[in-house]
Length: 314
Image 1 (spheres, rainbow, N blue to C red):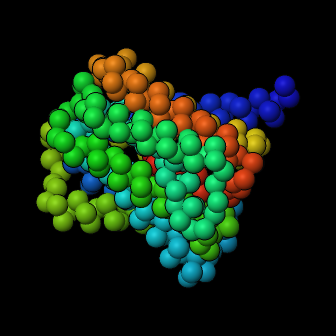
Image 2: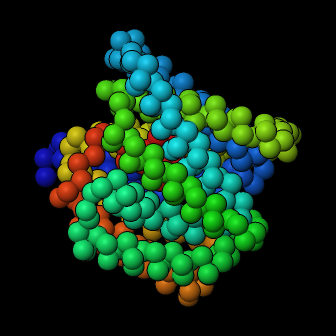
C-alpha cells in the first residue's frame, strides 16, 4: 500500500471513530449544558474557526460566493446542523447515545425514499433494503430509550427520527442547490447558519446558561465536538472523498453506529435489551444493502454527505 493510500485510509479511520464518538460526547454535554444553546455555540465557534482557516490558507477569495450560493448554504445549514443535529442533541436527553446513533443510521434509507419522490427509480434491491430498514426502525422504537439514558420520555426516539428526516432532506438538496465551490467554505457557512438558528431556538425555549453548574465532563464533551467532531473529522472526510471511492467512504453510515454503541457501553454504562439489539442489527444490515445497491448509481459531491448528521455538524 502506497503512503498516499495509507494516509487516505487513516483519514477514513478518523471519520469512522470520531463521528461515531460524537454521540457519546453529546450525551455528556447535555448532562449539564442547555442542549440548543450549547449546540449553537459549538457550530458558531467551529464555523468561524473554519472560515478563518480557509481565509488564512486559501486566501479571502476562497470565501467568495454568489447570493444564491450563500442562501442555499444557509438553508442547508438549517436542515443539517440546526434541524438534524439539534434534534439529536434534544433527543439524547431521553435516549441512550447508542440508540440515537442506530436511529440516525437510517439516513441513507430516507434519502432513497426522497429520491424516489423526486422521480428517481431505485432498484428492487434498494426498495427491499428500505423495507427491511423500516422494519428494524419499528423494532428499535418499540424497544424503548435504552438503559443508561438520561430520561425515558416517549418522544425521545421520535425526535431522533425527525432529526434523521431533516438530515436526509438536507443531504438530497445539497446535490441540487447552487453551493460554494470550496467545501470548507460551504461547511463554514452551514455551521454558522445552523448555530444562529440553534441559538434562536434555545432562547425561544427559555434556555439559560449557568456556568457554575456545568460539569467538567460537559466542557470536555463540548470542546471535543468543536475540535474533533466539527473540524478534524470533517476535514478528514473531505480529504478522503478525493482519494477513495465514494462507495467506500459511504461505509461510515454503518460503522459510526457500531462505534457509538461500543463507546456508550464502555464509558456511559449503556445497555440494550435483545429487542433493541435485534432492531439495531436489522437497521445496519438494511443500510449495508442499500449503500451497496446504490453505490454504482449515486454520485455525491464533496461536502454533501453528512456525519450523522455531521458532514458539517456532528
